[in-house]
Length: 100
Ligand SMILES: [Zn+2]
Ligand SMILES: [Zn+2]
Ligand SMILES: [Zn+2]
Image (cartoon, rainbow, N blue to C red; front, side, top):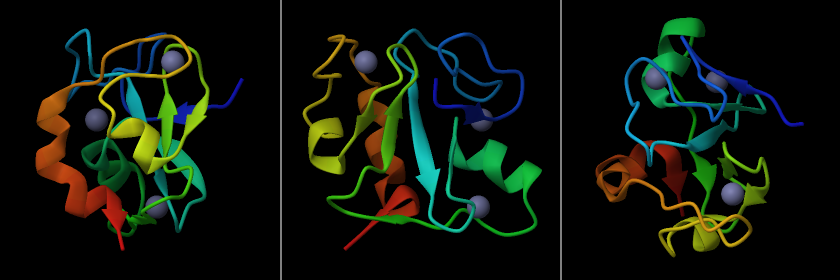
């Protein structure tokens, strides 16, 4: 099972910052080469700011089924494997997580 890093994580990778039912998407830091529950967890745990992943890469991990998702799959709004919805408010942070 692919590991998710973060602070106070539950079984589906929800962290102390984002813990609604739908907050299960973990994000890939291109520098660490790991998935983090959110950029705030990352920036607390690491000595650099979160480094965005390329759009089209496997930048997202579903915390429920632990399948890796492309940014395109993620932007459909729900996991194509387990049908879990993702939190649409994460769109505010796209520029932190993804880059062209
Ligand atoms: Zn990093
Ligand atoms: Zn967090
Ligand atoms: Zn899933």
